[in-house]
Amino acid sequence: MIPGKDETMGNTRSRLRAGLLCTGAALAFFAADASACVPTALPMGVKGPGLCYGAEVWPEPTLGGRTLEQQFDFYRAPSTAPTSLIVWAHPNGMSKALPEDSPMYQALVVPALRAGFSFASIEFRHPVTNEALPNSDSDPRVPHYDLAYALQFIRANAEALNIDKRNVFLVGQSRGTLAVWTALQDDMRDPDSPDPVARQSTRVNAVYAVNAQTTYSGAEFARRFLIQDDRARFTAAFNRQHPKHEQFGSAIGSVNAGVKPDPPVRLIYDSQEVGRLLSLQEMNQHDPIHYPDFGPALCGAYAKAFGSSAYCTYDADPRYQGDPMAAYAGYVDFFKRYVRTSTSSP
Image 1: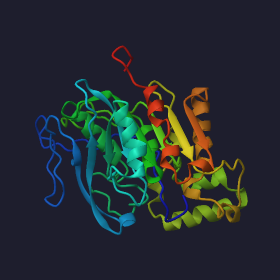
Image 2: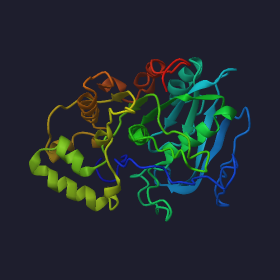
Image 3: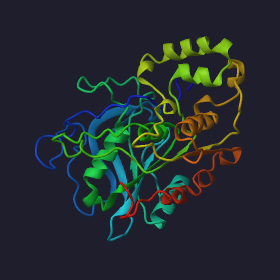
Image 4: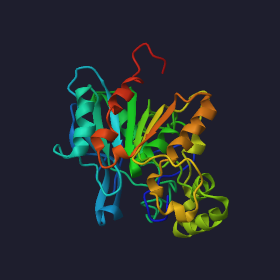
């Protein structure tokens, strides 16, 4: 949330671009630039790294300018019946790759596959980390919507991936808690689109997030967490450093308990909750990007909207610091509570 760090975006509740991925008929999904991967209908039984969901290419500053593409790695759970799916969004300084000998693979992929969930790790642009990227002339909202695009592409290829479109879950950390914002937006599907991908839902059953930023507005951060005397100075500095700050927004301000209510959220932070307003000098002693009070702020919005604290829970404790096995312990069990069966309502 401090300028130059990893933040997430928005409070825009709008549809994805119409015609995304579409060249015309059926599942011949898109045309792409020659320099990019080419997203096409996936073959039956597909799995492994480098599956293409979009045609964008960008230099990633948190990886030394390495060129990235809109791809995902897919870990298929062995099953004859369609499986539930967990979608992972990584933090800054990482790519979608999860080597089998890495702590993150052990914490995330192993328990998912063991429980019968398939798992997808997404490469994506971030609205603040990648704010210097030029937005598309046809869709000025990018790069905000990559996770949503990926969800739609995966659902459009559900048969090839053997996944149950009714049971999709998001897990993310830091930069990857773009997943929280994505999950709290109204469904971005366009049911009337000629594009079979754009007709797919972007909604998920539940979200699990570690060190989640729940607002990406400097003004809201100041209002919620800083003493009044320091708010204007912080906000002005934030806005100067982020010329696109108006396109950022707030997961907190997106909470909706209406006809199609937002999904349950579980939040984990690796430092103790502060519980009071701080001066800028005091805030400098904390990590404002992973500020633990982001959690109670979002859960307070959930409690106000739903009239219950059951839909958003958080735990803030230093024991999670540097320990993915602890931070993600039980995350699959949390998702299991929200798996829909054939008799569940949609």
